[in-house]
Image 1 (cartoon, rainbow, N blue to C red):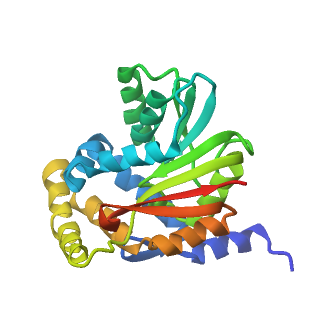
Image 2: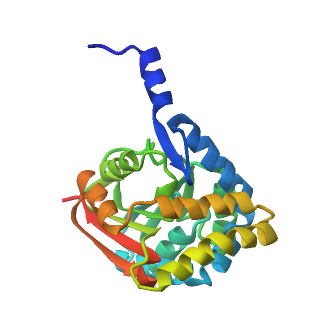
Length: 261
């Protein structure tokens, strides 16, 4: 049976997605997420420091360390998805003389912050920025040696579609790495972390960024995200092989790796 475009649009509007603890229309979520990050862009990195006690820097270092960027000058092309402020891209570029990194982010405000930081660091010739949707990347098949995404995948309305897009733009033999908040697996730490997340982080957001609601959403989005095993299964479903994960800080965050073989 053929479904006309009007029927298809109606079906999409009926699909639901999680926005924190709320259920919203799939076609609504992206705009709502965009609004959150437009509000917090200017204080995003400062708030990451405050929320994680600086641990996010160590986690990002661990991610790029596991990526094993070659230090020699031979060219390698990397795509960092949802990486608007450039944290991962700059780490990759600074480790490899031949690294060229494209930062793809759907949010203009986050990209503006990243571009300004790239110029300040003198990396604007090797780190470029593109406004792009993780579910529909504007890049050719098999273009990149590696695709990374840090603390962004949980904000994508259709996570499975984004994983399939990452697989598509990777070269054969290319690697996917994802850093994301996950499920704490240390007794006692889980309750402490939950209390801190729901009681302290929104207050920090209000004090530092003047916006408690955006940070309440971010906390809720972490709680709704699939645990390590379920997310690994989603990566495998997208076509990746040799999928594995490493817990960081007792599972507060986790690194997931997969290969396009």
